[in-house]
Image (tube, rainbow, N blue to C red; front, side, top):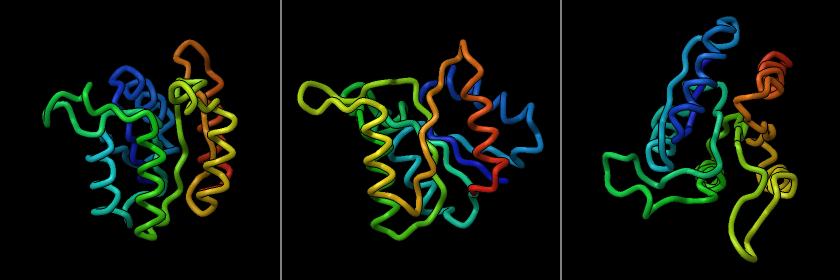
Length: 153
């Protein structure tokens, strides 16, 4: 299985990649991208390569070497990637893996359950669910392993 991880947090990405590498039967290779831009470019250019995309919801628009990422941070960057995939008719299985319970600010705040429901409704061919990542717990590992092994991919 070829997996694309789109995640800006180095610690989170390292923990996820380490887990998937330890469970070697789960993946053949893992490619990581760190922003909306590098993630969507990778998907567009290599859409036939991947079996699964693990997608962070909130991330910078551009990689750190492009400019000041703090000015271009997108709360719903993962949603934007899913919209672009749908617009281009790119069918890849996507699982959101996030550390947040709430997304957005003010009137635009969504809790993770509401976000999950909206993603399921808007992207039924792409979206395979949301996993809550917490490095001090192991639940996310089992959820990810089951997602991969159940054949829902």
